[in-house]
Length: 616
Image (cartoon, rainbow, N blue to C red):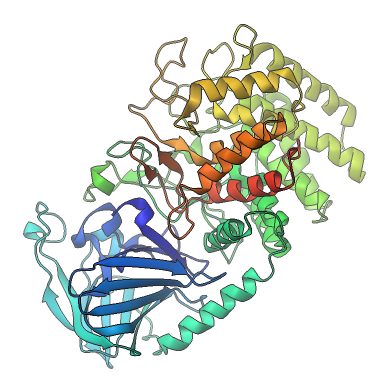
């Protein structure tokens, strides 16, 4: 299925993708970044799935989330009648669970359930047996157990047409199946629980109660939202999605629930996004504070402090959900990839890159925390002083840039702007909150960075800032210049940069991060070191809407924002990018950065023609 044909359910520890056909094709247990036990999304039936759908052809599908909830309802029409599937993951008590229920809406509909768990990204077939009235699936340290009120048995679910692989010759798929019927008013619940295989079986749970209890939890959480601007429904859905991508034990928010969904269909730009990016820090904090989620904002701030603690020269651009630093990248050779986009990657080698901008992101986020009253002193300021002291010399070095490009290091303009942000927020902390630091020294360094960016990052001939010093290429990250307060929106250099990005980086009304196909010194010299193209980056398109409003083009900003809302799928979810030529969402899904940017742009644009010029 298309990426947009999926919806997400989760328990604030991990998340599953449920297709329009009633099949769960992606689930990592017990955490976001754990190996998948259902990996059909990146392969085929051999790699794990859980299907619950009519046995006869589906004629039509309608689906929605329950209001202000992460409980998913999917109605499927057949010649025999209509059924409703209800899916959720209850908030975790001990181990992860998935609750599914079939409800009869009309007629009497034959149903089919197929459960084929394959641990370790589809490579390990479990030992399946009946035990105490439940079906257990065990392999090594992992186990699943299924409670079902219908008879189940093992069956060969056919050939996939794939070549021989780690799961057997010819792609034969053995699964636990059940055939049953559902009539009007009937409810048939299924519960699946993960547990360590050396422990006792989890106790049976009433799936109907679990679904209603989960729905109540999400509705209560949503009621805390204080956002009262325009597009409230879209903002609320984005906030629920951000909560679903939160790792509750630590407060970290992963960038997406998936790995290796391609940035270009059939391409090689396939990365693991099940980690927490510092790049997202300020915008995440801002989005949470906009909606009144102070508790989540404080938890994210605390995660940030723990993750970056230590030697400032070892600051990473991303960390694991609990702050892990080792994110070794490797290729899953037995998975053919989404629509054959190879390779499938686990881990992310970009975690070892040097990105100067993250120092600015951390300082900006902690400054925002101070502004809203989250612990302005103590250990947080001690850490910030160390970070700024490193930047006193570190800002002069070339880096890998905000987009994790895998080409040579350069003096990226955005990176230098964010170094300026780090100094600016440190100075503001001293001046506004009586924090202790060498303010005169940092003011002078702030001015030095500003002067250099305006001299070396500016192309006077074209009237725009450029991707890196001496380049003619553009980069959508330059749209942050007025948003972080580096220049005021009325500055002609801001207008020139916005108009240049519109002219050179927009494709069918959406914004590319940069032109990945450009080659040669005048165009960018293949800055990312990778072949092929990618889709338009949705977060950057929201930034352009913010910039258009800042320079007085409010109607153009509204038009772009509405266009962006229009590429959400039918349940309000966004991926990382949009392929305008194919008319499809691409990249990992659902993408926190896209939803964060939606929330912030909605706040900015609903206030009128002038969003804040300091990223607030």
